Length: 254
Ligand code: XBP
Ligand code: MG
Image 1 (cartoon, protein in one colour):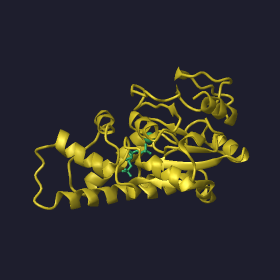
Image 2: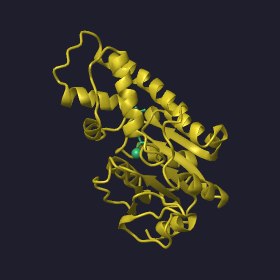
Image 3: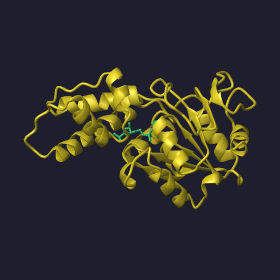
Image 4: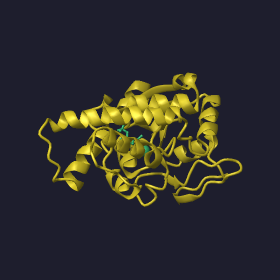
């Protein structure tokens, strides 16, 4: 295993718990704005998270949960229109500071920077959503902390395909074994492991029952000095919150 040089963060569910109170709310507002009586409650949304990508998720909903929907226009154009409205609502929610970063995220990002390691993002979500989350939680200059922000439709296939992580490695100019990924979901872990990148999971309320096969370890969050993490499975590390030293322990354990 080569020396650890970069940490690649997933966004939704990893940097912040954005799905239930962010994306889901934005989708519902877009449906209402468009005169559609669709409503994704928390339970249904948990099922729809099986599919990554908002446009793909709407299509999945129509084919699996609303097959009787009749539309005399172009369904692809409708999905694109709905998703654009949804993104506007989601960005507005973030600008209203509706979503905070998860425990330990700000602390660890600063520690990673202080240690001279590189930062990157590899996410299925729309680039505008990443910009809004980072700027509204870490500040406008924080986008520059990330050497690569790989997001959304920049690659042909979304997670669990490895494309977004392969793209990120290429942009970083690093090999998979020089990096470590933080993910939150089964789709994310399948994607990063398909790209052969050592992966650590911080699960959440939507993904706690996911299959994280291939991950080095699963924690409930990154922890803070006054908020110890719980290690759910996999390799143990010293300490009660995840630090750069923890990352090096996890990375060399592979
Ligand atoms: C999570 C996703 C995204 C969001 C919705 O991405 O799958 O599709 O749920 O965002 P990740 P969009 O966990 O890779 O950050 O509507 O912009 O796709
Ligand atoms: Mg995620």
